[in-house]
Image (cartoon, rainbow, N blue to C red; front, side, top):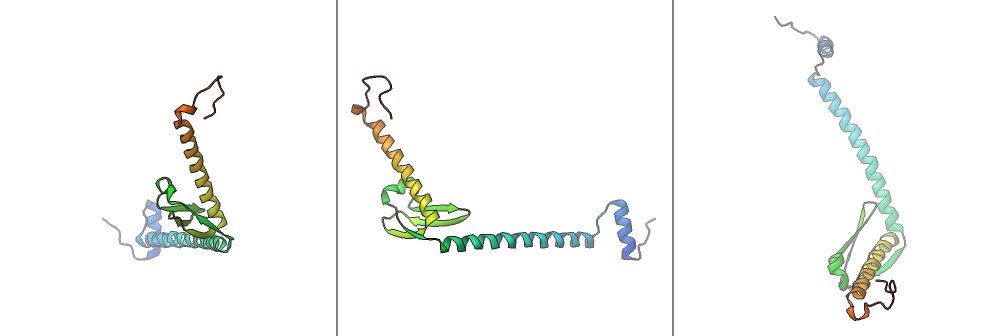
Length: 138
């Protein structure tokens, strides 16, 4: 026959004894976990906002992306640094963006220029001959 539980204290004792979690205990645990998660999220959000302010206050550099690079980078170049994204259209107009993102975009353009130059050198069959082995550097 089942025993009637009269008090919450007795219910907590029995639940601990049998390893069963009461609904109130589970609710308290969930509320505590949620408040810890919210605190962690607010700390991370403050850190992200401080990064946004840092990049907004950074020196602005004019950047122009030619439409020639659209097949390689897409029509709108997205550059993300530390989770902060800057988008610059590849339409030939000049835009002022912060130095950190500009440096990354300029580095992308330089890598594409080097790749195009390598393709041109390798594609020029008439100039790709060696008089001595190892003379040609493609």
